[in-house]
Image (cartoon, rainbow, N blue to C red; front, side, top):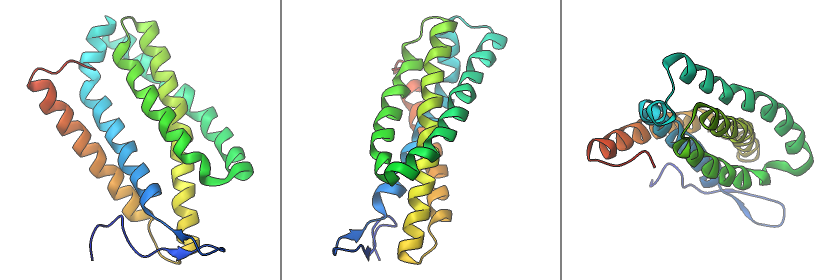
Length: 171
């Protein structure tokens, strides 16, 4: 019983347990980021002074950043393994602030490009980490991981909406 993130870990060679907390927490963090950004979208558009079309164009930069990052992350996982995930999560967290700082459409596009780079790379690495964990533990965790992502989106959007309603700024 207990937390769905807890659980007895399988043993790595050398006796260290393989924890599922880190990779599953990454899915929660990923969902929190996207839920927060979704709830902030109108404020980001206004702060950048973007029309609907300009805002849509700026949003395309998420994909412009994520696609190449996803391709390159696979190679890095082959070289370095899933231990790159904490570094990618740190980069993702740092990049998440950039759209909130944008005061122009160009700055918003650049911030969303950075978000795309780090979320694309993080997406590949966290899925690889859960797949690796499933193979080592002999259990299915991917459905739990994706449910935690969805819960993160919900919590991020609701918390951000509530904070904005209570007067919080976009940062």
